[in-house]
Structures are given as C-alpha cells and as structure tokens.
Picture 1 (cartoon, one colour):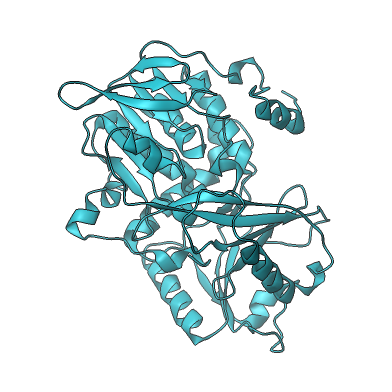
Picture 2: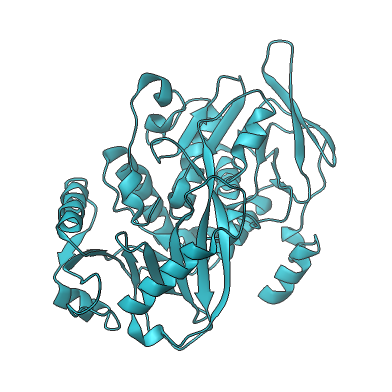
Length: 416
C-alpha cells in the first residue's frame, strides 16, 4: 500500500484524510455504545483495544480537526519508562512492552527504535537524583544503568564531555530499551487497526455539548455534524480536556502550558540515541528523515498558544550548541508548542468522573507520547468494564481529594 506522506498531510490540512478507503473518515450514526472524544494516539489506541480485547465495535472516535493533528503531531517522540514512583514505573513500563511489539501487533511500521535514552548529570544533585531513579527502576525490574563521562561519550560520540563547558557532564543514566517512534505512524497504525474492526473514526466533528439524562448520567453529545446518542463517553482531548469536561459541569485540576520543540534541516546520521538534560532544559534525538529533533521546557505561564515564548527555544539552542558543538552551523526548519495538560502532581488522570458514564484520560504533561499504547490499553479496560485497570487505579481523579498523590515532577528530565 503506497501513498505519499506529504500528500496525506496536505489533504489533512484541507479537511480530507487522503488515506486509502479503509482509513477514510466515517459518517456519524445516530447512536453508539461508546464515544471517544479525541482522535490522537491515546484516543485511537483506546478504540483499538476496546474492539480487539473487549469486542466493542459500535464505537465512534470524534475529532474536531483531522486524525493525529493535535499533540500527537507535536511531540518529540521519546519512549522510556525510567520513572521514579512505582505507579509511574508500572504504566510506562507497560507502555514500553507494548511499544516493543507494536509494529507486529498493528501490522504497520510505527518505526519504533530502541536506540537508548541517556539522561545527563551536571552536578551532585543530578548524580543523586539519577542514581535514585536507577536503583528504583532496578527494584522494579526495569533496565537503567549509570555511565561515567567517558562511557557516555563512547555511547554518543558527538557529546561534549570536556570540563571546559559551562555545565560539565559528571555522569549519565542510560535506559537502553528507551528510544523513539514515528508519531504520525502510531496514530495511523491504531486508526487502521480500529477501523478494520468496525470502529467509526469521524473527523471534522467537534463536540459542542455533552447531554445528560434526568438522573445526571451522560446520554449523548451535540456536535457540528449533529446529535449522537451514547451511554459512555471517554474524553481523551489533550490540551483541551478542561474545555470538554466543562460541558458536563466537571471541573478538572489541570493547567495547560505550551511545551516547545523544534527540528533542524535533515543531515546524515550523527545522533545514535536520545540525550536529555534537566539542568540545562534541553534534549535531542534524530528522526528517520535526518532532522535533529530538539525539545525544550514548558513556558512558565498557562496558555493555549502553539508557539510559546521565543526565549525558551533560544535558551535551549544555546544549551544544545554547547553539548553538541558540531551542530552549531545547522539551520532550524520549524518550531512549535504542543499544549500539555498538567495536574498538581504532574501525573495523569485515568478513570471515572463524578458523572455516570463519563470517563477521562488526561493530564499526561510531558509523558503523553511515550505512554500511548499503555494508556490506551488500560483506558479501554476502564471504559469496557466501568472499573479501573489495576495499573490505572492509582491515577484516579479521586486522589486529589484523598491526598494519595503521585509526584513525578522531576522525572520528565526537562523544566516544568
């Protein structure tokens, strides 16, 4: 099956997916057993696992724009599970295990590459923090190891490890099973798999209201393409969850920030892994097209901007040029800001809400892409059974009332 990625993107911008027939956007029906709001990676993964593992096929995925056109198309594609707390380790490791076989599972190449994720230490605080992560990961059976500066340089030879730079490298933590995948291929693969199992994917269909019956339970949605009845709704709308949930009078503990990134002109392979630095707020890998993919921190103010503050990208490029001197002459092609939902404890919310029949999957912050298959898998279980998957149970909305928080603020390895 051959088609042009560029042609797909152009037609998507015009409101037409441009996919082969079995991938095309469906027309909405009057009623569905369940509706998923948001056709990004998490929403499509949820639909796929609902159909494959729970036999629910009378499902619609509603997307106000085009499939994968939100945060799924605006991220730096990093995959890893080297988080600190047991709850986070469980869900991200679950996701990594699914990533490892995802191309076979979907019969579609998502370009998963276990090239390794290396996190740099620049001071004693970094050393203690990273070694704490390493010990916690090993206790959970997750790979992570400590490297000296010389070993870090041997693993990534373009990395500057001399003591002359402003933030000398004093060591690094390496998760060899970490890596990258192609963001849009993941969305297309899950869309293809879900569609083949009877799921309707409806693009250019914005939800404008959530309807509720006399008892307060959800009864359907109003959209720009008409009313649709349903008894179950799963909201997976990264960056806009609070707006959608407000339609059902549910207030979410979320703030939205631009998270910036940019890519260089394409060059021959020179970056063998992913390198991240929390201290100087920068990380870099190389895409299969040859672009250097550079990530920065979040802006310090709440915003729905998809550009963010210019000073953030400028600071990041200064750090990248210091860590990787050979890239200083490269030109940047484009930069962007994905909108990330952030919870008070920087961990996601997965599960039921106070409204009967309304479920939510949100608040991933900087962890959204890497969690895609695991998130969809556990959220599908929750939607199908009405009860949280054991891995998802700690991430309930109720934890903000009980105080059982999962404070993963430092695990992102970028500023936020």
